[in-house]
Amino acid sequence: MNNVRQSKKRDAMLALLQRTVRHPSADWVYQQMKVEFPDLSLGTVYRNLNHLYAHGLIRRVGVVNGQERYDGMVAPHSHFICDRCGTILDLPKQDPGEDYLEAVGVQYGFKAEGCEFIVRGICRDCLCAQTDAEDQ
Image (cartoon, rainbow, N blue to C red; front, side):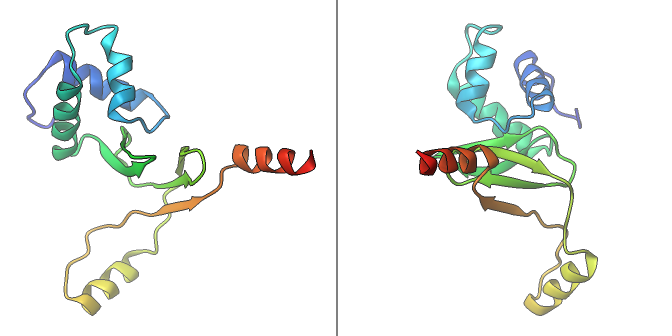
């Protein structure tokens, strides 16, 4: 685990994040883990999420509906976030390429090492619900 001190709770949290397609909040992680670890506190969940993030083992997706959301898949990829329901979907890796990163770095005087894209809009389920409501 990248020279990170082992912890049963932290290992279980990382495994949970890596096997879910959700992009969960700390509250969701807490609810899922509370069954196996009854002494778990929400503060412990936040500390461990921050620790895993700091060591590059998880990603932060951003704040959705007032809660920070996390991703156990650290390979480069983009996200779609629904502005209505907060659903987050993984999108295939697509970025503007090395030329863009180099050009923007030169233009603004920094060394760009990567970029992340978040596409925002309305998901299929919300669009269908909107269409159904309009038809009635």
